[in-house]
Image 1: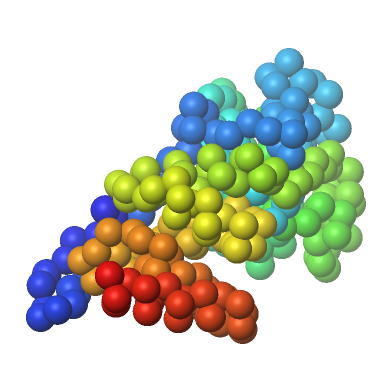
Image 2: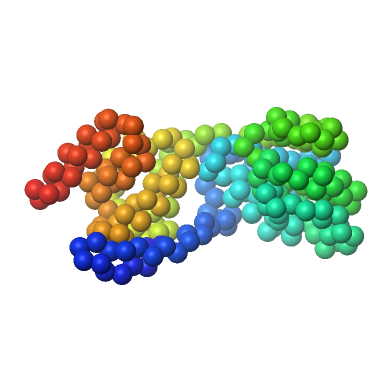
Length: 252
């Protein structure tokens, strides 16, 4: 499991260790929802990026950050978080050092001048730029006219909502990464009750891991039902299922 624990009576006190997601190419789950993004990231298409800029956008957990990390690693690109940009023009005085620039959560940047300077420096040195965000760059709320113009000229590619098969594979992979042994029957029960997003799969895996560790129990349907009830507190159906399963487990 992703956490260490110590015994405290009938319940264990969970001591959290950060679970670090894997961003390897082999771990990326290709599907129709991300096929267009993968096609645009083909090295042979870099020349087709307008102004040598591409933006991947989609909801949390859609895979855009995973693809950004893979691209940055394979192209020796400078990888930056959009939330912590500074004036990085000095880094491009030796353009041969980098194969490109990758900015994750670029739409979250509060330093518009820094983002503009970065895009300008990359353009002047001929480096490709890959951005990620929750929406297409043309929709980002920016005040600087020059930055707005460059963002509108950036090719934007959406990552769609993951398919049912992709969600199942993702959930099972996340459980394996956390060393959780969960039966197919529990997964079959849980999956259709979760929100249809990759983010929900990640949250479910995290909560299952934490709850199983805290109580020192394997992941059963009653435990999964209690986790689901916490994730979806307003769902009467889920709450009733959690109560029924808790009663069944008590009787067993």
